[in-house]
Amino acid sequence: METTTKRYMLRHFLSALAYRGANVLRNMPPEIADFRPSESVRSPREILNHMRGVLIYAHSFMVPYESTEPPMLAWNAEVFGYFEILAKLDASLLNESSIRDVNEEDLLQGPFADAMLHLGQIGIFRRMAGSPVASENYVFADIETGRHTRIEHFADPGVKRR
Image (cartoon, rainbow, N blue to C red; front, top):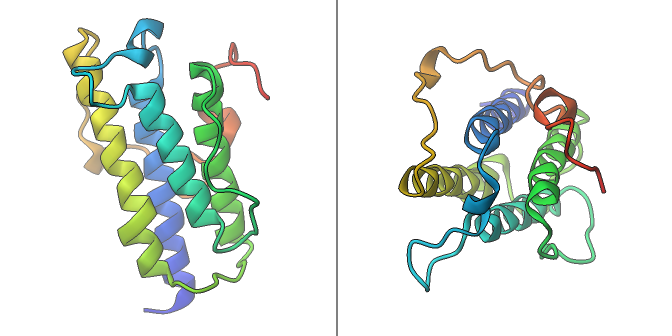
């Protein structure tokens, strides 16, 4: 498969992460951000922070970072940061930034797949806390490559940007 196709597929996967993330994160009651089903399990806020770190790590193969471990932020800032890193990744892939030390498949099987898994965890925690996400058939979702990674598309207007 040629690099252009691989990058398009990665960008589409990022758009799916943004779309699904919006469904899971939008209108989540604030008290669920720190919900823990048990003491040893990360809260949704900690999971979202970890997701940002994983995606920053993915981006670090294209753009140098001082650290790929972001500080823990308030819930709304974590949500904004999630969409922000998706937008940065999408822009780097669109602009054909060089990928160092790994390839497109490595990004998909590692950090991108990890982020999708963690979105599912947050969705499960929402259900456990009494605020389930509405079901949707994602095969027919209106996901357009590049569109859903624009921050303004899903960011809550009430969220203060850093």
